[in-house]
Length: 128
Image (cartoon, rainbow, N blue to C red; front, side, top):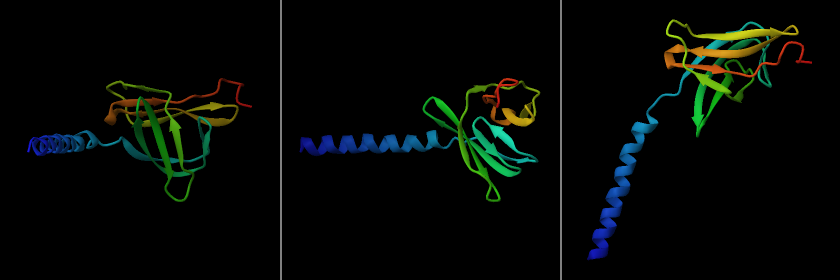
């Protein structure tokens, strides 16, 4: 009789943990879309011109940017180097820098999600 009560208590405790879990998973990943008019390097990934969707996923202590080509473009998953809190007056934008005639993504500013993602960019003259 005592073992049945112990089992029932353990089952109730286990089920109560599952009722809490959906509230933790209910937070929506930051996501959106953008259009590239020319080839852009995202760290070691090169994306051609076209429409893309993105989402930011957190896995443990790391943040990843997931990029998907809308019309059959390239798909990629990038480790985000740094996540900062953007200034209050910022607008959503993709920040590009030019190095040796090529474009590199240096930041993706997402004030609506209270984050600004930073990416590695080669130094001037170092991207050969």
